[in-house]
Length: 82
Image (cartoon, rainbow, N blue to C red; front, side):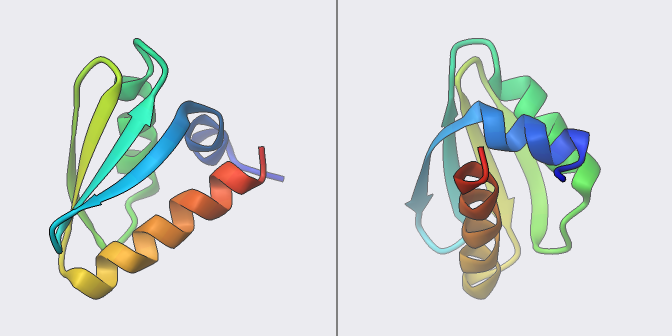
């Protein structure tokens, strides 16, 4: 069973893209990016340095390249559980 914040990520994230070695770009439906970013922040994943949310896009800053891969796997695993 997914916790509320994990469910928000699973339901909200439409696509996951990499940008460089320390940034992940998440796309959501219009108006959902802030809610998903708050959910990521609440989960306090140790690899995440912070998030910036627009209307339908979130930039997730991670601490290094290995962290980027771990966070991408975490997000994709949640999305796969929808």
